Image 1 (cartoon, rainbow, N blue to C red):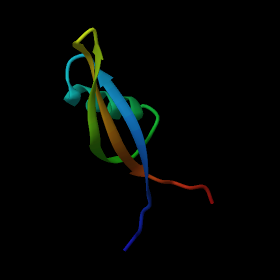
Image 2 (image 1 turned 90 degrees about the vertical axis):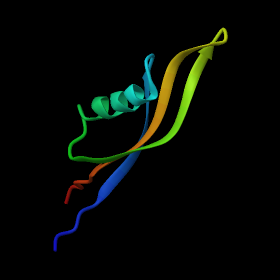
Image 3 (image 1 turned 60 degrees about the vertical axis):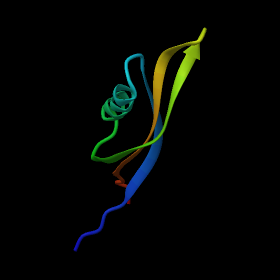
Length: 71
């Protein structure tokens, strides 16, 4: 059986529409520079408020990807 190692990073995605879109944005931006993405776990949701109105949704995401260390 082969073994693998995965690294986990924390990202914050933003959206002016929804938390779901904020989380999706975080993963899609990360996928441009990281390979072999595995699991995205939303760990915290919050909102940016200005003058009593919600102006942005934020999703904190832990994202894992396969670690390929140099030998």
